[in-house]
Length: 292
Image (tube, rainbow, N blue to C red; front, side):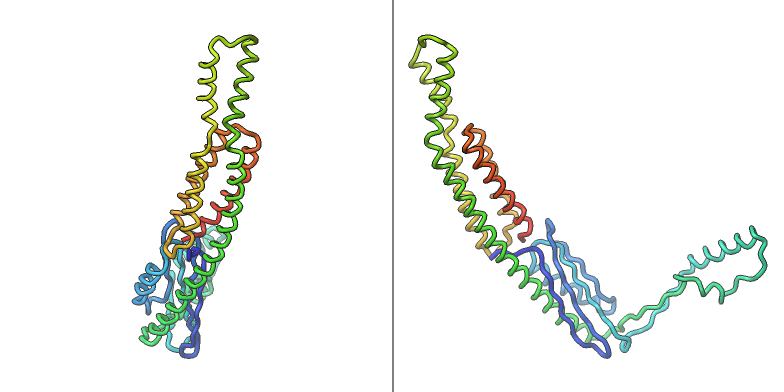
């Protein structure tokens, strides 16, 4: 069954005195794009995640994030922004000279400014942590794929419903099709007779030309091709392979046949039905954008 490009997976476990969690989500995207964020200390398993994502997902933007919480087993890291400190200092010196203020600018005063010092906890390299994150990550990816399949099954049901509606509308047009050529012939014949307002010099030639013109209203070929595309669309949504682009192609072809039917028929009843067919086609097109 087809798969959706949207999904979510999250797995969490205990590590030391804290927790570790892997969260993965995917949204629509023209191609496959994977973004993985994790602590540098376990960065060696990033390639494993990326490989599994590429094996399980053909399209979509996939974001994977690893959260590690807990101090034991971590190192505390201090960062000092020397450039920002210099800007603070020079600004204060300029202000002091311009206002003729007294006093000194010492380290204690400077340390009170925000953003000069920052502290962060970084997990130390721990093979057990890397192994746990890898296990949780594979489970989260499994949950993501499971949700994408479930969403795909719902999309397939929706496609089937709209396809059945479109098939009913196509049958309405097909029932009207046999009379279109004859009506077109009689309509043009009446116009010619009205314009001539008298006997026709060459009646057989006139009928021949009118028949050729009326034949342009024949939409049998377009209906046959439309039916073929609809059948192929219905068969494709049963596939287990990535078919989003293929379904989009079939919709383009179906739209082309529907537009041709409308232009050739030159019939009010058919035109009304075509509007409904286009609406169903647009609903299908919107949903196909979610298919892998």
